[in-house]
Length: 137
Image (cartoon, rainbow, N blue to C red; front, top):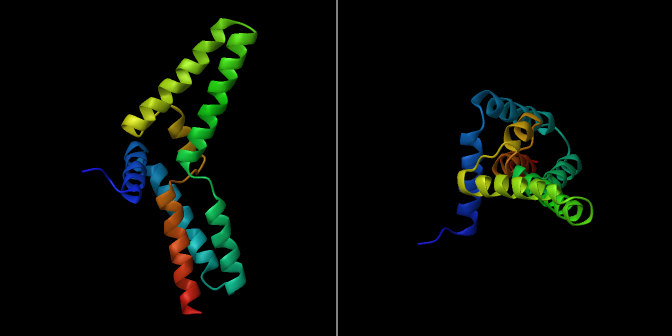
């Protein structure tokens, strides 16, 4: 039986968290908790603005996909226009993207996670905590 879309998203986020060093996950979780506490006593307008910002925040999957596409297209254009050796860039990037799709890990992932790029689940955790504050007010 195939996964429902939300289950596939959660499975992907779980793979990313499993592939991330525990101390990096802890830093991201700590920052999320700090964000939640920062907005706990805010007015409804401020909380709604933050929730809108969270809806716009790019998750690690989107960052990887956009960066991979940009680099692959760059390698393709340069490979056709400048030197065929640039096609190795396209091949390398697509290999990383395939690896991430299959394993939930690829070489750029640790860098992105250390930069604080969160999974959709991590972003949603903050979002739903803030929505709970709205209901209390």
